[in-house]
Amino acid sequence: MNSAFKEMLPSALVSNTLALCGNIGERWLRDLPRIIHSLEEDWSITVEQPFVNGEYNYVASAILKGGTPTVLKIAPPRDDLDNYSEAKFLRTLNGTGVVMLLREDRGLRAMLLERAVPGQTVTRIFDNDESSAVPVAIELLKRLHREPPPELSAIILLDDWFDNLRRCQATDFPAHYAVKALSLYEQLSGQSERIGYLHGDFHPDNIVSAERSPFLAIDPKGIVGHIGYEIAVFLNNFHWWQEGKRDIRQRLDVAVRQFSHAFDIDPYELRQWAFAQMVLSAWWMFDEMSEIYANEVVKADIWDV
Image 1: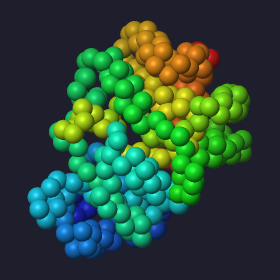
Image 2: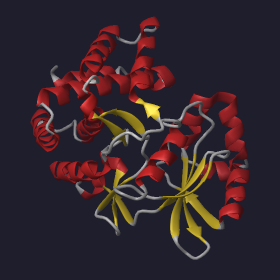
Image 3: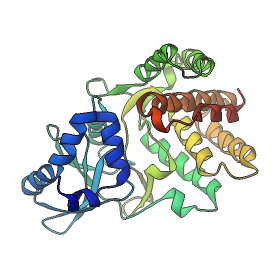
Image 4: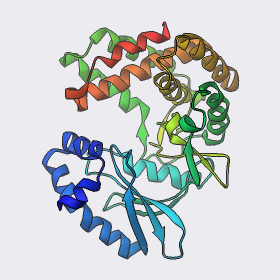
């Protein structure tokens, strides 16, 4: 990888790729210019500079031969289903509430995506008016939610994510948080009527403005699980977005009640889901990038469960 190209890459993408993929990730970073050039030829696109906020994938604007703006996304060689499950989710929804998948190269772990224009995130649109983002999220989530597909290959199961949390017992991760999160998950996830095909990473920065629809979701994981988890992801990110506010607990209470009413789920159950999801998220950070983990799990106490 030449120095000029490396300087163009977001520093977070480089550091995360090396932390998660080791030597294989280093080789992928070196090979990235060749991969991009190959995709430019195969898909008749011109790739522009990468987005500065790319943390776990190479993401850049790209222009089709006819001038249509798109987005190129290339995943590092991580040992997971994320890239394939995202493509399957986008293909299944076919533009309903999400950006469209235009092309896919599974071998190169690459996708060409519709570019949402103007593409402003709700965190930017509703800066200093965070509560107004909640009805937008609710309306979009209703459009996304659907029954699981009959064929589950290349789909992430929420059960597997929480099963992975059990590995924390052999580590220094705070065990009482994990035990409680797993107990709550076992209790709540048995509600089979609530199981659906979920975005899996539904948060304010993954909801953007668009021309063909007021808002579209980007960067789905594509998972099968309880709708409470989907809402919990939003609630936890809603919390992080404004955790410095003195009335944060009141803001969270209002948001919980709005989601509760919209999806007919008990408010306390949503708080339980938010606790479990925050613990799981903290475990991922501890497990995969322990060098930057800062005891984030204690923030789950905000949910009072």
